Length: 443
Image (cartoon, rainbow, N blue to C red; front, side, top):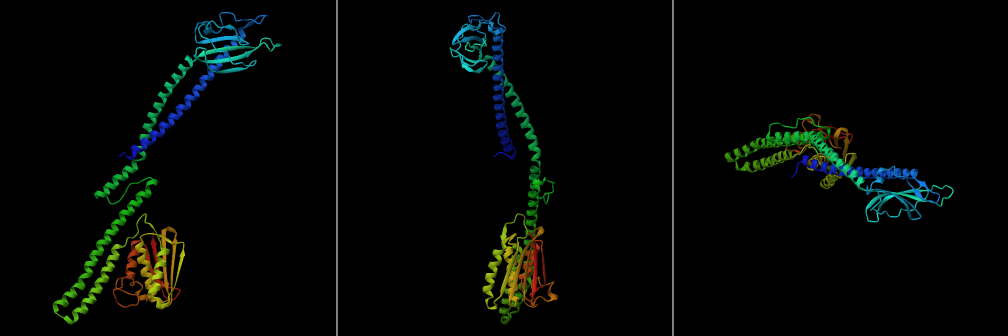
């Protein structure tokens, strides 16, 4: 497969070839028109010279003294011919017109010209000019036609010479332009080659991200690539930390169950196992969710937050149907979020479930988009709220907003998701009287 440089060179060569071909055609056509005009002017000059040299006798006879002022008309078969015709009859012919027979000229009026390309009686192509003249002013009926003709040899030679020069010049111009295009393209594509080299260096581990300074047209691409690299490394770090935390967190429950089994306390073993298995299940769920969080990534797809919010509301209305919760959802230009759909489900699901759980009768979800790519979610309820002493710890795993110990992980998962998006999570007092959770995400 051809490289990008080769493809561009081929495309530019085709365009250049088409342009130069059209240019050559236009110049050739213009030169032919110019050459024909020159022939016309020359033949007209010959005709006027003959008119000036002509002597008309009293009986209407025509006499042009020899030698004729136009040298070629004195030479036999010189390619330039002339004659004077009246009423279809030749009255005078040039010495050059010996073997060649001209067709009768087209009838023209007095002082009128007719120029064109016609064939002789033998079929030879000629440029012919017919000029109408009358020497007897009072008697306009005595009209004569001066007919001058020239073969195409000189014209064809002139056009052929021009075409050879034109092709040579256009070919030279094409070669120069192709060379210039090659240099310009190589210079223009240098940033792409440098970017490809940096990507290879990243793949081999010799550098961590793209460091070169690139033109504005490529900067968005290189910044996105760096963003992908950072997001991938952050995700890998989350996987490693989650696995490490998971292994560490499971040690205590396993040790307790092992100790109970070794002590032979059959009465307490069943309760111990159930308690620790539930605890381990919560730990596993938390760590898996933490590891699966996508976080902020470049070129993330658009997620319809309004659709997700309404789906969660419908589900929670059924789960908490006995409470008759009134949930209001307000959107302020923030119906779309650029991120991972599962992260949005998890974040909204945990916050809204927490609000439904602790509210008395009302929940309010406000979603708005702000300048600078900030996406803000606010979940308010009219419940008991969060104790000030727990405001800084409520997002830790194992701490619940009702101040009771437990293995709740909902708000901890929310905190991890917000951190993955480089955002902020705050809890305060709502104007509804309960808790107000404010989430700011960067998209």
